[in-house]
Amino acid sequence: MKGENRVESNKSERTLFSIEDINSRVKELGGLISKDYKDNNLVVVSLLRGSFIFTADLVRKMTIPVEIDFMTTSSYGHDEISTGNVNIIHDIRSDIKDKDVLIVDDIMDSGYTMKRVVEYLKSKKPNSIKICVMLDKPSRRKVDLSPDYVGFTIPDVFIVGYGLNYGDYYRNIPHIFTFD
Ligand code: IMP
Ligand code: MG
Image (cartoon, rainbow, N blue to C red; front, side):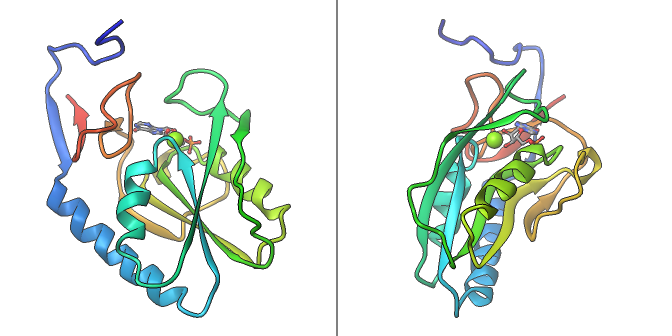
């Protein structure tokens, strides 16, 4: 039904990162990654669906050759809260053997998703694997894993926009916000 899973209209939206904040940070990250990987065979593995917007922006700020591939994971339970049971429901198509993989996601929360993806991709014998997330919530971490590149570190608040959803909505909103 249209409008299902949207937050009730009595909640107010509070912007955490504006379009300008996001643009300038993504540009910095793209520059940094381009410098760090200038002598490598970089493959970006973007985790769907949450990272589609961040990935599209980030790779356009990179100034080195880059292969781009996508992977979809699912975790049992509610969409917004990951559990330890993370399944790979759509695999990458590229051969990453001996290449340098950068996994790109919207947010690292418990870290269960990322841990599963890192372990899975390792079995394909890449030369290296690093992690880039737009947002990091380190206070929520349940596994011993940290991202190598972070857009913004945030406290334990539920956020939407810039690819992040609540229910079926909000991914297309160009800034990052929370509900108060
Ligand atoms: P993790 O496996 O707990 O690290 O969670 C990763 C996934 O949970 C992200 O890719 C998002 O899809 C979702 N998620 C975690 N925190 C938020 C949030 O604040 N807003 C929207 N989705 C979130
Ligand atoms: Mg996600």
